[in-house]
Image 1 (cartoon, one colour):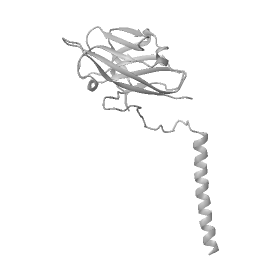
Image 2 (cartoon, helix red, strand yellow; image 1 turned 90 degrees about the horizontal axis):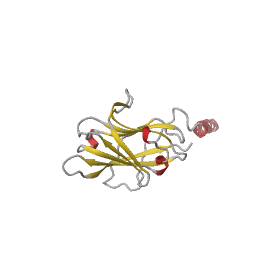
Image 3 (tube, rainbow, N blue to C red; image 1 turned 180 degrees about the vertical axis):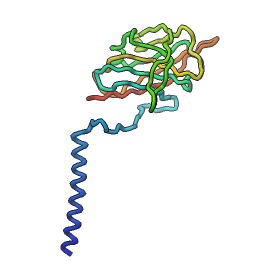
Image 4 (cartoon, one colour; image 1 turned 135 degrees about the vertical axis):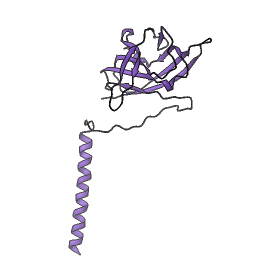
Length: 192
C-alpha cells in the first residue's frame, strides 16, 4: 500500500515539474521566433455596416520603417472609382509624406508569393491634415474588373503601440458621382 502511494506521489510531482517548467519558458521567452500570435480581432462598434478589408505590413514594431499595402480587391469594388479617400489616424498622418504614397495594381501575396506592385497608376495625391485624410485621384477611372489595387504607404510607425484603424471611401465613376464607404483596415502595432 505504501509503495502504491509513493508511485502516485512521484507521478504527481513529475507532472507539477513539467507544468512549472513550461510556465517558466513561456514567461521568460514570450517573443520567441516560433511564438504564435492570437488570431483575434475585435471592433468597438461592430455593426452590419462595417466591412473589413485586407492589408499587409512589413514591420509592426513601433518607430520602425514600414511598408503598408491597403488592398482594394475586385470584390471590394462594385463600380469604377474616380477618387479614393483614406481616413488616417492622427499619429500616422504626422509621419506621412506625399512622395511616399503610391497607388498601384498589385499582386496580393500569400504562402508562395510576396505582395508587390505590378503597375503604378498615375494619380494626383492630396493630403488634407485638417480632415485627416489622403485623397487619391487617378488620371483615368479605376475599373470594376478582376484586377486588385492597393494604396501603398512607406512610413515610420508611431511611437505608441496599439490598434490603428484606417477607413476607405470611394467616389464612383458615371454620370452622377456618388461617394460611398469601401471598408476599413485595422492595423496592430506592437508596444515593445
